[in-house]
Each structure stands twice: as structure tokens, then as C-alpha cells.
Amino acid sequence: MTKIYTMKKLLLVLAVVLFANVARAEGFGFHLGGKLGYQTANLSYKKADIESGFANHFTAGIFGRVTVKDFIIQPELLWFKSSQVFNLENDGIINPTLTMSQQNLALPIFLGYQFLDLKLVKLRANVGPVMYFVVDQTNKCSYNDQALDVEANGMTWGGALNVGIDVLMFTLDLNYSFGLTDLVKANELTIGGENFKIDNTKQSIFTVTLGVKLFSFGL
Image 1 (tube, rainbow, N blue to C red):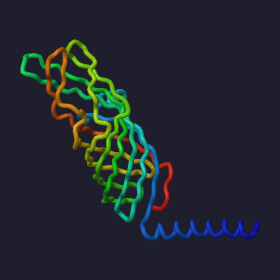
Image 2 (image 1 turned 180 degrees about the vertical axis):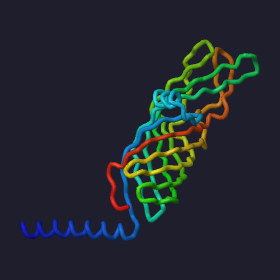
Image 3 (image 1 turned 60 degrees about the vertical axis):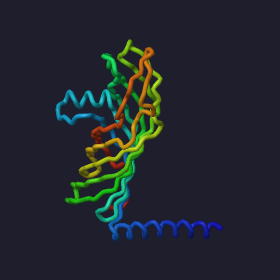
Image 4 (image 1 turned 120 degrees about the vertical axis):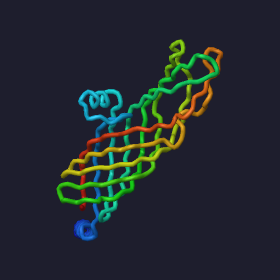
């Protein structure tokens, strides 16, 4: 029985080694890692703006990447904080604002192409759909400082364009995501007996992340 068990282990090791060699020969690679970053409505290289982004719109998550020659499939799971201000309109002279602060999960699935490979440095471009999930939210209105019961959609859809650079085990990504569906379910609100309209609650944002490949296999 022991000999059979040993033989099975040996065959398993040989299969893994054989698969690794085939994967390298075919230009296959797999990476798994984590990333940290921030979101911003306007890109800036100023230190104060970057620090504000980390403080107010911190982003963290994990990513996986499968490469077949120069083609890339990269799913990610990111947690982030967001805060949007929407204008409320009615027929009167009062036009208050609604601030929605949330904790969210984003699930982008990128398809891309690695267009430059200098071994130690690699450049790539990606595009793909994004699913957004609301984890928690708070609302505040400038009209009498009221907290409003405004329900956000539990899941919304977006699209994203991404460019990135890999240096050894580190990755730097710049992502622009645009909303395809509205964040708020209803487009009419009642505040203090008055009716207000809220339009175009689609989210569009830049995301900057720095990641590290914690596990790599193949290219």
C-alpha cells in the first residue's frame, strides 16, 4: 500500500513538472496578488491630492491574471469607499444637494494585450465590464441637514479602460471606469413636502493602484 501511495505522489509530481514545462513552452502564465490604491474624479500628481485620495477614497483588493502569449485575462475584487454629491432639482428656487457615502465592492473582468515586453518591464492595456456591489451607505441632504432614505441599487454595471506597467513583481495600474446603470433606484424624492428630481447618477471615476504579485507561475 505504501509503494502504491509513493508511486501516486511521484506521478503527481511528474505531471506538475510536465505541465509547467508545457505552459512555459506555450507562453502561459498565472499570477495572483494584492493591490492598494485610491480613487479620484480628477487625476493629479500633487502629494496633497494623492494623500487626500488615500484618506477619503481608499481602495484595496486582490487580482488574478492569466496570460497566453501576449493576451491577458485579469479579474479583480476591490473594496473601496466612495462619496458622490448629486443636485436635486424642482420647480422652485430651492435646489439642495444629496451626498451619498458608500462602501462598495467592484468586480472588473479585464481582457487585454501586452504590447511591450522588455523582460523586466512590461506594458499592457485592458478593457472590460465591471460589476459594482453596495455594501453599506449613508445619505445626507443639504436641505435642513436631513438624512434621506434614498435606496441605491444593490448592483450596478460599468465599463473600464485600464493601462498598466509591470516591473519585476510589482504592477502599477491606471483605470478609468464609467457607469452604465444608475446608482439610485428612484429619480424622484420628497423632502419637507416638496418633490425633487435626481437625474444621471451613473458613476465615473479614475482608480490608481499599486500591486504586488504574491504567486506567479509560468511567464
